[in-house]
Image (cartoon, rainbow, N blue to C red):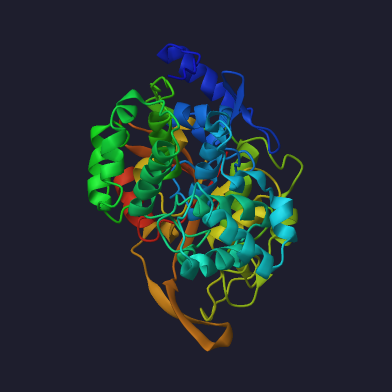
Length: 467
């Protein structure tokens, strides 16, 4: 068994240290996660943090999005393929000269091949003594994978994984950026275990290694039966042949168990209450931007995390991308001029707001997070820009026409605020509301009942976080 020893800390010290760390993360460097590694900021309080950290140290997980890992995001098919390819690399020394020739090709070589050469090369590797995973009639699938791979750097890994039979889907069905289904994850993990058995590679997990004959026996069984076997082997926690899918952290946990790495559990300690320090910025004085709540709230969040120190509101608003009708492409109209006709939806949606914010700091679109996840983030010291309604009134919808004459039904009484704190005892959020139009001489900061706030937030679940 391979053993990875991680630094243990008592609950109080863990809370103090991680709070200090998360506040020191910059836009260009990982936060220090201990154990001689750099840990993405959004893993610091995650219960499966150590599983991801071990795989990063072992080279099984290599690529992260700047300083973030996005542990709760559904794992994509390409991310799953990369993990499988890196697992194959881990076993290279154990192959004793029988190493499949697919391992001898790098990205540069594959990218230099013509389509015909790629198909010919794929035919050779699929018909060698190790493989026969693809018949001659199936070889065109690898050509399609070769052509449609969204990232040139991953073509070698993608073809390698398919050539070794680790993906049960047809190559023509591979969609790099689409989430991998639960069935796909289970089947692929079982296939890499089967690959080890068929290539006489020892399985580090003793329970798996003791069931080598049974693994071969159920090689053609249903995904449900394979899932049950993995559950009984302690690899997965429950039957998972549903459509729910797995997030990235959950897949990391399964891989560490299959690889038999020793991983200490994370004892997450959240404070009962946390208010994130930061400046208050009004959207109506001295800069008058009556419909600029999204960018104003984001600027408050950025400054709370130490970004955009010398950036003023007008400069920030002027730099925000603009468009004429579609808030998915930029802010519609001008943040300084409300559309009294209500013909346009003067707002900017989270994805494009996030893209804009990334020019200033670590901004993440967390749309789809439920209220419980928002509360966890705020208790960790992560400010959240949340889309609700003006004055917390009932949502009101209108039809809007965007480019091409397309009709969209969107919420009309939109307002965006900054969640800067949370009290779990009273179940209230601390809000920095940029629209202090009733009294511009005072900050509009207040506590609000989370039940009331959550109901309006859940109307769309649009949110952006700054780490």
